[in-house]
Length: 243
Image (cartoon, rainbow, N blue to C red; front, side, top):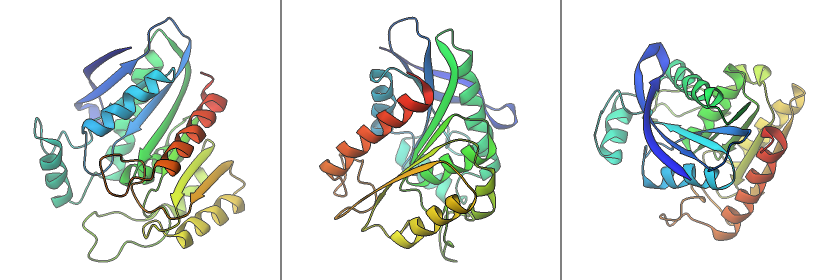
């Protein structure tokens, strides 16, 4: 595969960096926008981008914290972003739209682009799928797609309940039954609303599993759940992105 850091126009035309990984070969193939978790544009996220290239997709992760902390280490950039209330929703949508445009413009593109996000990125993946013309979306334990953030919550967000009628593509959700945000009750509410609005979705829930179970460098990592989750993601994108 080929990997590189590129710059591209995000929200409001701002030039932001992103990590791009592409498999060898001429395509055509689908593209995947990877939305990083709150800890930022870090090594683990870049490994995920490369994994999608290994699976046969052009994959791009925009650095959502660049404006607050250009050239800062991921942890420092995340802290600065958190102190300012997190990534504004409108800006997130613009940055994902810019990343999707890059992927569709590649000569290897088949025109289809999906989005996936982890933790805060899971919510943002659903937000993007309700706001943009995408072909597939994966929510990995995104907090506050439903439910109400507590008053002391450091990230200034609302839930996405009012946007769910606008969901434009199939959604895959992967959740831990020991998670608190989203809790099983939050996931139940999301499933009920998707059914109510006639949306295409597929949910998988894992026992003895909490938040962050895809992160191999964290105590929350769960091998069985992560391995099954990757298989579900691979099948879901193969069906909806055509690679």
